[in-house]
Length: 249
Image 1 (tube, rainbow, N blue to C red):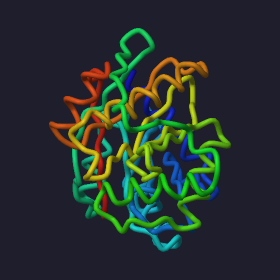
Image 2 (spheres, rainbow, N blue to C red):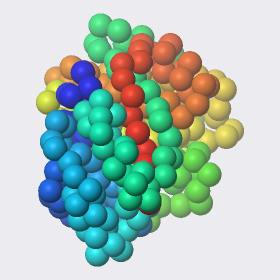
Image 3 (spheres, helix red, strand yellow):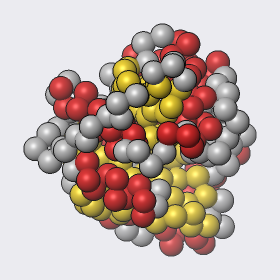
């Protein structure tokens, strides 16, 4: 499973508008944002990596005007962390990823005063971006680049789901990345404060997984940002399957 997940991350970075092959690494850049969570690299699983490769990767990020950063499944490149630490990188987080299949999915009920639907128009995409930005502590607004990024993900086969209250107020949402090798990462699940603690995060996650499975995806995977979200995802049918490293310089 680790290798399948890592290969899917590599494939997704290669679909970015700006991607670069830097020796054994693949880097994805986005001119619309300098966020390190969007601009990062990952190693090709099983590739031999040297200190010179790491230096070349740092140079590629510097030329792009971005912070050198990587995300990867640790078992796919067991010696890489030591090379990165020696080059001045610092570990941001170590997290377990969780997976779900059509057989394990357990969809909870959607709160009665909320509807879930795919974001089909740019105004819906803007509302989705604004809602999830607010949920993660950023300004409750959406840029043209945010909207274009969501549209591009959907054009590639990914999914974007928006939650709205009965009065039309945006409540939250989430996305799934372009499927690769019948896998897709679910990410950015966010619920605005007035709508929390009602099961909406789990309902959004389950709806995105359901849509993925209906379109032929075999495995949905994600990461939990804390114990509360971990419990939510486990109730939906996700189970831990491996570890990933986040590291930057």
